[in-house]
Length: 356
Length: 244
Image (cartoon, rainbow over all chains, first blue to last red; front, side):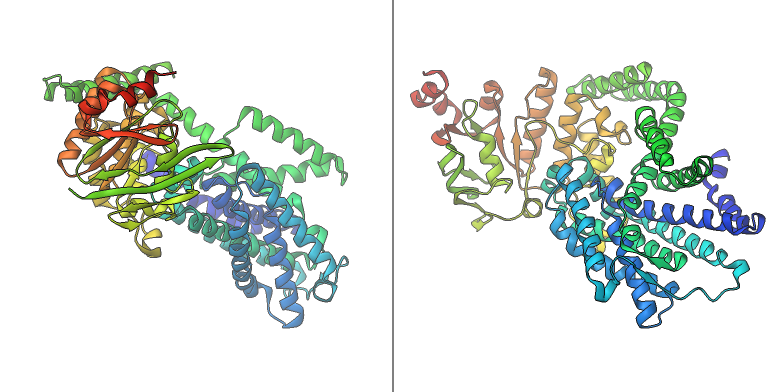
């Protein structure tokens, strides 16, 4: 009963999010909510390559910027509405990400991290210098949304919520698929995964492309939301770092961790920003907080929480296991080598759980 | 008897060292072939060449007369060739059961996006886990297993791919005598079911008891081969192990 209630928690959370803009009617809250959902969506997306696959890309802002620019250009040149061109342009970005991933995923570990930063810097340089397309450093403006000013931010909030749900659904689906199992295997031991038949190159490139998609969608919607974009904000290393920070805060490699992290991180940033004004001191404070979190919650909030719950339940589980062992022993009284192995196993488990 | 696996004049150099030198070996179908030699004689390098972890500088590998040199590692297990590692390698954060499922063959891109685990796959995995005595640990993460259990799990997972030939790198290394017995029995019973083995092992009593044919490497070259009792008394072999 309790378990069933816990399993349905996303429903009240969703209802709360749906009524939130009507309870807090000032545009400030709508923008804050939008920023939370935007970062949550992108972190969920990043988690596919960074969490499931274990490849820490610091350069995912590349796809954010590409999405933003493609949407802005399409709006200006072709008159395409960003709301539907964002998911479309994100597909283009994903194709580019397949190509980039195919090159970059030849590296791993620290080399991959550096390559991913290099990727971001290259695209930022391109955005700054391909003036005929991007207008260089001044950036691009695009038409304002046609909604009445009173509600100008609310549609963005709901639209981003839809994309967060889609991103979560895709992430959950990947996690449960054979593809996702392969990704987790790659994270744990890539060479071994290759040896047991996982086409690691294909898996990694697919994961990289998939993780670029929702980041690019987010970039496209953000570009419409801010109405003016420029290379230093669209291709900003900090955007990529934030995706990682919130994922690590909530729990890297978990489905909900990135969302939880974003819901804590963005309001906290805003609060600190209010306290100290628009100086860079909020970055220093956040940096300090992240160091603390990495020191005391290295695996993130959700895994720490579930470990803690498991430990609390452990004594009972150990007892049950010991009993089932005893039953097994009764069934096979002849102590052949096989039951000896099982016996050794059971005692190992029991001792392990007693020490916990 | 036909040759299941054959290497032809394999050479692999690391800098100035020739780890495997002109090595031609044959593993007969239905055999348990032992591969022995002093430390650094190139046994593991030879395994790595056969399984495409290293590219040979020259020479070729054949499986059932088909050239498999340079075939990517991830394709080899679909051709019936699987291996274990000298230092056990598992997916440490995945459960025991998931460790069993990863090696199951996937056909086509559609199955990639199917469910992580099919019912029949799970059932098969449980049968194999039961065989190695790990069934009750199926939901535990692999890192919680004891050393011996990890070895058994790696072995059992390899079997999920339906291999014709299994390369075992020190199956008895670092495990207690009871477990060695158990692993030997396992190899024997799988052998009876038609699996061929190529085994690297330092424990000579295990090799002599288990294998029906033995290859001896020294300094990257094959210096002797034959049935256990012949190899055992071969002066060249004794010299390689005891000489200098």
